Amino acid sequence: MPENFADRLIQAVKAKKTPTCVGIDPIYARLPAEITENRELNDESDSEVALDAVLEYCRRVIKIVAPLVPAVKINSAFFERYYWEGIEGYWDLIQEADQNGLIVIGDCKRSDIGSTAEMYARSALAEPDFNDMDSLTGPDAVTVVPYAGLDGVKPFIDIAREEQKGVFVWVRASNESSAIIQEVKLESGLTFAEHMAQQVDAWSRDSGLIGSTGYSTVGAVVAARDKDSTARLRELMPHCYFLVPGYGAQGGTADDIVPCFKPDGTGAIVTASRSVIYAYEDMKYIERFPSEWDKCIEQACKDFIADISKVVRIS
Image 1 (cartoon, rainbow, N blue to C red):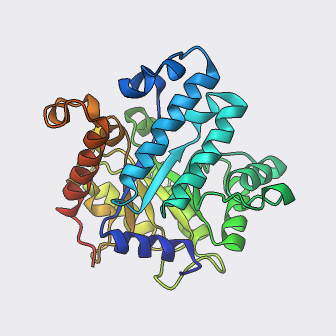
Image 2 (image 1 turned 180 degrees about the vertical axis):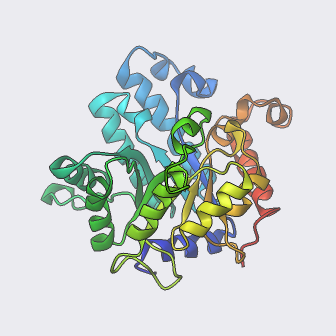
């Protein structure tokens, strides 16, 4: 297996023949009735009971999508909601996904400087270094926010280099109001997002980060908006793998994501969360699988893969 994170990601994408990733963003109120109506799991006001229901659901989602996609993105916020037991649950799911052969992206969006950034990097990305945790596996990659500049990102990059992991740096978000900041024009003529892309490109070229495929362990979170601006970000970060949010429930389409990829089908992995994991709320799937929420998720995942395959060919 390749050591470089980007090389491993490309290998996993080619093995599954799809550049897709399912996001795990569980909300108790939206869990299937089969789980929440269980007498032992039917109390949202009890943190332990609610978390048990959430984790049962997430484990089953992971098992459903593992044969289909190369990666999952687990959003830590949905587990931190349950305090210390939720953090333990988040790490349990990392183990579950890893054991199911998936690339695991920890969506934690950490950001700070100095020793705080170092502690964030150590706790969020590094392999645990305590003697009583030697069987615990950390995520393959994490997301970070670069507003503090290199000081806030370097601790993550250093660990990624040392442990052959990945860092996805937030360059452009998928929410509408982000344009107020990210599309502002600077004196250079670049937008703020383009300026950030230039910084991430420079970080991605640092010693020991670029693998045999030409991609760096430093990638970028890039939401696809209009095709011209997305193509510009692709041009500015040639060695960065893109983690692409916004597809599905957030309104993004397969056509929108095309400029994120290079002509050979590499360069990006597209994420879908709510449109897949809550597919049992969608009448399109309810009509086909009226009492089988797991089948709804499986079919939605297959539909997601098929939709992306219309515009991106994996060789």
